[in-house]
Length: 278
Image 1 (tube, helix red, strand yellow):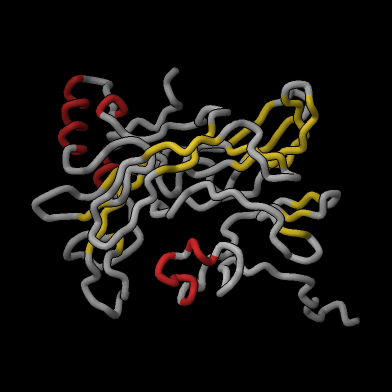
Image 2: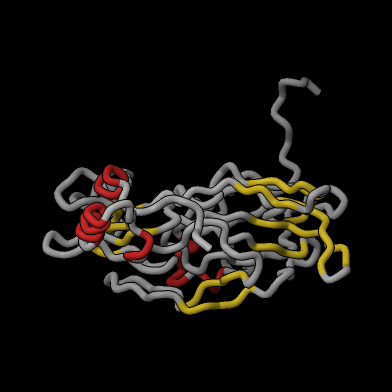
């Protein structure tokens, strides 16, 4: 065979279930039928002994082996950003092969990489609802009980800069134009006479993101890249149907649509981006 020839595909996995396939019932209003962009965003890891590619699917056939949804109805761009870390650890005196998944929301989800069972309980916790017309919101999100989050999560007045009373007062004034709250506070509608969106921490570029992490088996230590990177999630109606056929998009009223973060927040740095305080 010519070495320059394109290799034949060995197997594949349909990331969007089709009619009659596992999981298709979770796509509300038949949205599976017109959605065509759910590729693997980050890298993948492979366990050749288990013959698993960590989506995870069978390495040879591409068939689904197990899965765990880390964000329900993701409206924050909190996709899985990097490859899971494969490690062999000891839990309660028992050797376990694990897949540890860093995330943008700064949680590390740890699973038995053979069965997909969580190593430590993952609890469904209530999260704030939103109020965008026509949107549906997941009432809970899966929150790991261990390990604790490795970066800041959510925004409160206490998380604003406080180097001087004057700077704190200015920070509070700027943030008063936005919605703030815990992790998973939904995006909100921008109104000229109202708020300018929701501040999300970590933002869509925050948490572990593409750099991911690594595991030192000798010291039993996990090393993770992370950044708070606040993002504002403000929605507007598209100014022109040629721009988007969605009901709402990220943007600023009257401005040309573009992918942008909050100039106000980033310019004045009013949200602390230091490690979580004990």
